[in-house]
Length: 105
Image (cartoon, rainbow, N blue to C red; front, side, top):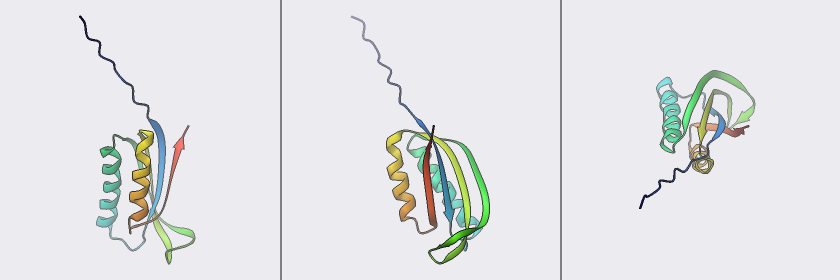
């Protein structure tokens, strides 16, 4: 009797995450926050393909009494179910002013 191994393919989607950090953070705190986001994505089985620092820019309108923020873009692949935890983590972070996670077709 031969046992067959069934290889299950896990479908991943492409995502883009843009997030804005508080303008008064030190460079070390900014790098630590970005690394924490990257580690969170990698810990959930995601693969980051591109990470861009857009720098400090003026906001279109004040968010939490801030007129500027540090912008970042991460492009990654992940399983569809892991995004809810990522968004919850970003939402409760005190250093993140806003974030936007979109699925890229």
